[in-house]
Amino acid sequence: MKKVFNLIRHKLGRLGPGFITGAADDDPSGIATYSIVGAKVGYQLNWIVILTIPLMTAIQEMCGRIGMVSGMGLAGVMKKYYPKWLLIFSVMLLTIANTVNIGANLGAMAASIQMLIPFPFIIWLAVITVVTVVMEVFIPYDRYSRYLKLMGFILFVYGITALITKQDWLEVILHTVFPRIELSKEFLMLIVGFLGTSISPYLFFWQTAEEVEEAIKEGKITEFDEPPSVLNEEISHMRKDTAAGMIFSQLIAFSIMLTAASTFYANGITEIASPHEAALALRPLAGNLAFVLFAAGIVGIGLQSVPILAGGVAYSFAEAFGFKEGLAKKLTEAKAFYATIGIATLVGAAMNIVGINPIKALYYTAILNGILAVPLIAIIVKLADDERIVGSYKNTQVGRIVGWLTVGFMGLSVFLMLIYLL
Image (cartoon, rainbow, N blue to C red):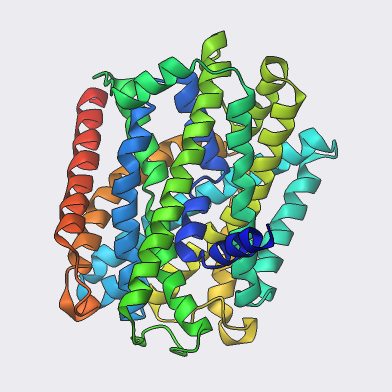
C-alpha cells in the first residue's frame, strides 16, 4: 500500500504547467458556460467533449514546446516574428477577455461563499480580491506553482456531483458517441461558446510563459528570452503533462454538462445566469450535498484560475512593451509586471460594483474568444513549425494535421454562426 501511495505521489508531483493550464480551463466562467450548454440542450452536445480533447491537446502542446525551446512567451515570439499591429491587437483583445473573465470569476466566487457563509457580498468580494493578488505577488514561484496544481484537484467535486445526480446513462452514451448538430443560431452559438471556453486564447499565453518559468526555476536560464537547452525526454514529459491536463479539463467539463442536463434541462430550467445560481438551483433538485460541492468547487477553482487570468495579461503586456516579467521575480524586480496583475484583478472586481453584468459580458466574451482563437491557432501552428523558434522540435505530421483541423473546425463554426446571426 505504501508503494502504491508513493507511486501516486511521484506521478502527481511530476504534473506541471500542462495540468495547471487544463485545470484553469474549468474556471467559474467555464463552469457557467458548461452549465448553460447542459441546461439548454441536455446531453445533445456531449460529443463535442470527445472532439475537443485532441484539438486542445495539440494546440497546447505546441504552446508548451514554443516556450520550452525558445525561452519566450507567446507574445514575445509574436513580437519577434510578426507585425507589431497583430501583436497589439491580440494583446488588447486578450486583456479585455481576461479582465471580463476575472470580474465574472470574482463575482461568482464571492456569491458562492455568501451562499455558504452569509456575510455581505461586497465583503467577500474584497477578501478574495486581496487574497488572490497578495498570493500571486508575494508567494515564491516554486511554492506558488505547487499551490496552483493542488487547487486544480478541487475540480474532482464536479465528477462526484455528476455521479450523485440521477443520469440516464444510455442517453449519455448515445449522445457522446453519435454527434447531433442543429443548424440554428442558438446551437451554433453554444458550439462556438464551448470552443471559445475550452480552447481559449488565455491558455495559449499562460502555458507558453509557464514553461519558461519552469526553466528559470530549474536554473537552466535566468531570464525570459534566453533559449534553454532541451532534451527529448523533457519534450516527451511536457506532452504527457499537457495531455493529462486537457483530458482532465474536458472530463470535468463533461461532468458539469451532465449535472446541468440531468437537473436543469430535465426539469425545464433552460436559463442559467451564473455558476452560483446553478449551485443554488441544484439544492431543491439534487439535494444539499450537490449544492455544497458545486458551490465549494466554484470558490476553489476560482482561487486557482483568477491569478492565471491576471498573469496571462501581465505576461502578454510585459513581452509586448518590453518590461521585466516573471512570477519567479520579486516585486522590486518586476514592478510593472506585478502592477499589471493587480490592475487587471482590481478592474475585474470593480465590474461587480459599478453595475456592469460580468456574466452577460462573459457569454459574449466566450464567443469572442472562439473567434479570436482561429487566427491565433493558425499563428501557433506556424510558429511551432518554424526552425528559428523550435529548432529541430518542429510539429509532427499528426500534430500539424490536427492543428489545421482545429483551425478549420473552429473557423467553420464561427462562419456558420455569423451567417445565422446576420
